Image (cartoon, rainbow, N blue to C red):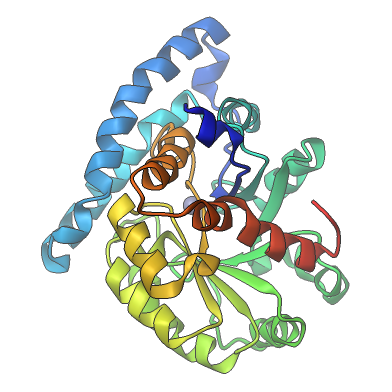
Length: 313
Ligand SMILES: [Zn+2]
């Protein structure tokens, strides 16, 4: 990694950590390191493909979604735990990472336990009423975690009384709310179509003071995300799953203040390195100014987190 990229401070706004898997219990650390290195080539390939998929018409692509998701999974076997993430943060000079739950695979409790140990990891819990004790009024009026809603995976209605109560509270405080965007047609998700950015229209229009952070720029339909965000000032997008070209366009249309660096590690492999390098390339080839790169990589996230948690990072 070049000196410029090493020197840029960085917060990864969206990562995950998985529980230790049984495969890892049967191999040595040295063997695992070799597997990780081999996956670097695989990741370059999956990243290159992933960034071009938005060109394929939706009607055709839908049939391939389960296959595309399957391609993102193999690296998880060798590189996906909290300890692995910590190594990635050190290797890529990342200051903090927001780690998101994805129940039932990655439970909210797992995120709380791991982020309590490592202060570089900031918890992002998934609103889920099976974990009602985490989302009580007292926990929510003084939240110690970022809140995320994944409309494709939830088992409640966004018009549910309890959800409205939370949205009203978030709106009153102008707090950030992380939302997964991008429809993925797979049995992993209960309501794939709810991933389409238009499904957020009523909520974003109604709660004008919530700072909506739209993960992945709607994945395969990034232009629709940008059009949506141009209409609503209370929205920001994150860079995961998008190409240098799309991030450049997003920066022109929305301004660098509304773009946050995210990798979605470890879903497509060693993507923290690949994604940070993308921003560095954009800086070197003049597609981003230093001030824009600093906003995207660190300053925007810093501003959000310091205001929300009422403390310096
Ligand atoms: Zn994710």
